[in-house]
Length: 144
Image 1 (spheres, rainbow, N blue to C red):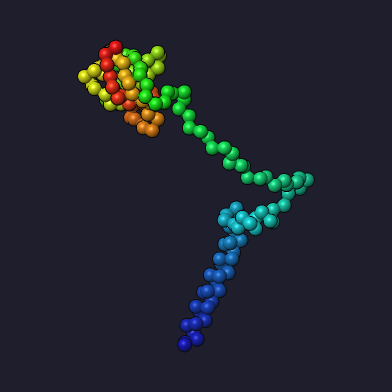
Image 2 (cartoon, rainbow, N blue to C red):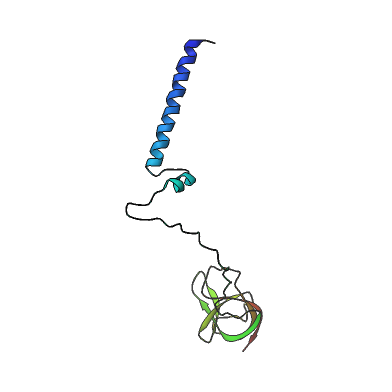
């Protein structure tokens, strides 16, 4: 092995090694990445203060899904069909001051202004482009 080629390589390695230590010192001084275990053991309270360990928050009970008081299962509603002029036209059923977006059903019967009785179910598992109210999947429709 040629010694003249080995010495400069060794010098370069020493410079890189020393530089990485200096950078690591800089990173920890400026809040860069630091071993959290070392940080918690070396932390000291502020002058005149004290430190109290804070336990992690407990997960607590899982939240139960809420359907906002909407009926579940098959239901029958009677109301007026309205064609809302948004997103290319959205069919809704107005029942007692509440709006339900209609999904499916016979479009010959579900016309703007028609009074109908709809048997269906509230769908909380679908998202629509209209987003004008709870989605009512139409299973059957009759004139009211």
